[in-house]
Length: 216
Image (cartoon, rainbow, N blue to C red):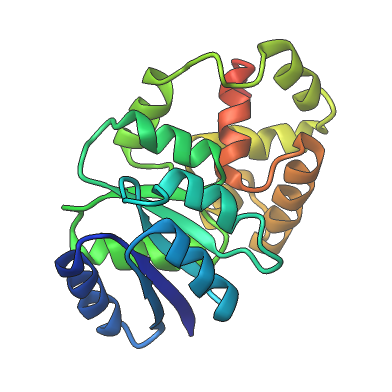
């Protein structure tokens, strides 16, 4: 059972997402919040596996909330939500530790798929909009190219192969198929890659690879 939290200042959006998630027998909505501060309180009181977090909210926005959620003793995976395609704030949310993002008008089946993917350790980088977003909002807050490259240089050749596919948004199953590995072996490689690159999730690993101009 995937324990989820919905964070959005629009009550109708929360209601709609809750109805959608309740329709999946493997997903349980255990908390809701109208802003980032309430989300931190709820995530502290409940064990949350995946949080769907709006970007723009009063009191504490989704970007700040994402960073705070990722520092909790048992941090949830985070999917940020936005009304705007190519919204610069979503890039900041990904850099803050979110595992992906969705547009609010995303097909309901894709929202459910995203929750399952993120809960299993994958990321929502494969939509073309996500790649355009990361490329467009390349700003000075990102790590310097030399620093990013020095971290990638620590990887083994096989880890670099995995990172190249991870950067394209491939799931563990996709990577396993492409490289002729077991999925459990891919998971082990991804874990070592995150440790070596000094990042917390796959999205940040992909961002760092792009910082370095890494192509495999």
